[in-house]
Amino acid sequence: MLRRIGQIFFDEEDPRGTPVLVEIDNTKQFGFMIEQNGEGECTVFFPGSPSPISGNIKIVKAGMVEKLNVHAGDVARVLGAFGAGTEALFARAKTHQESPTSTYTPE
Image (cartoon, rainbow, N blue to C red; front, side, top):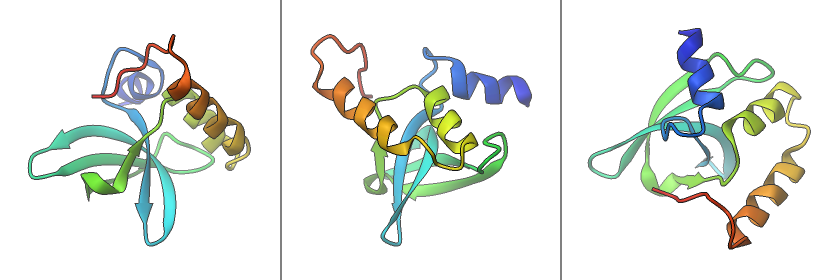
């Protein structure tokens, strides 16, 4: 189990564990997309804070999910800091989306 969690947070080649924001009831929550399911749904792992190694898994509508252009480890560090660093994380995500040299390719 710990090996799988490590893969989600730190394996940049594995598309499972893609950092996302999910809009739920006029709020947004960090999560990691585990897989895209048929019929426009996604399986998302919602980590806890300050310990992102446990949390909940939910099936959500794909339209509620916004992929973040940052590394999963960066999101895990923000969660571990009770959300401190969120503004800088969003700034990096925006910069990566605008950069022509970014290697990020959304699925």
